[in-house]
Length: 388
Image (cartoon, rainbow, N blue to C red; front, side, top):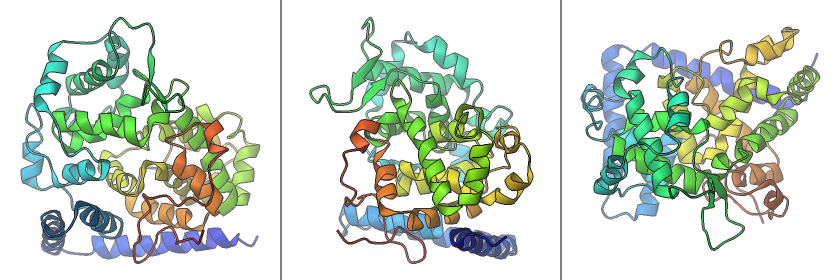
């Protein structure tokens, strides 16, 4: 059977990524270290460009993240992150904070928040956090459950008043159309984990608060509307780029039972539930630089990369369960995800870019000609420029 044109395009992108990965793996250890040091120097130089505006530096950092990636943490950074508060912020942590707009923090305020002890949501929080990255000793050594519990309880205390009967509030109380968030939902425990892994605890708290309230409030909505919409967008993207695989999965119940699949879990956690953590943080480099809405493209890319195995399986839903899905491979997933973002229809892209911020009712009223200001231009694979 002849493959759809978009499938052929994505297959070539994946094959190119595999060849690039093979070349990188073929380097000697000294060559890799030299390359990583050179890239780290480029990032530091960009961060310290005093003659450039912050917006110009952010634009350049985004380009670097999407084209070159972020160098792995140094041994010094790894040692520093084992302290009680996490030590100094790693380069990746600094980049994430800048991309999120969480540069400034008030450590005294955070200490004040946690000094008041657990909140009324502590039982729910503790019931969830022990599941995060179970069996990953490196994560548990660096991010014990107590750290996650403190950050999540501090988020509740900062944003909600104790004794208030309402478990929800508007991001902007004076605006009845602003996003409605709840004090705590289960996916928050998975979302806070990568932040605590790459930056100190107070930094992670402010980054988490900014991420949830400014970049994806619909994912903290009482009905988890952001995640629900993301699943539908994944299916729509898949229908466009690979109609055959889309129809096969729909026929097997994916649209009818999204809660049974990794699609829903990956959507709600921004793919943080798909191990290994070392690859999750690389995917998050792209998400935080491109926009958290890009997780839709990441999940779609994973399905496309599993195309052959899914089409051969009479029960493909089993392959999409957490215990069965192949490990995350950022070097393959990210290039394919960026290509999907580039080839889907403009109207669909605009809806996806807006869905972390607004409700499904508001989505129906948005202007499809609006260009997402989080989009960036890179030499090889980006969202194309469009004419209004």
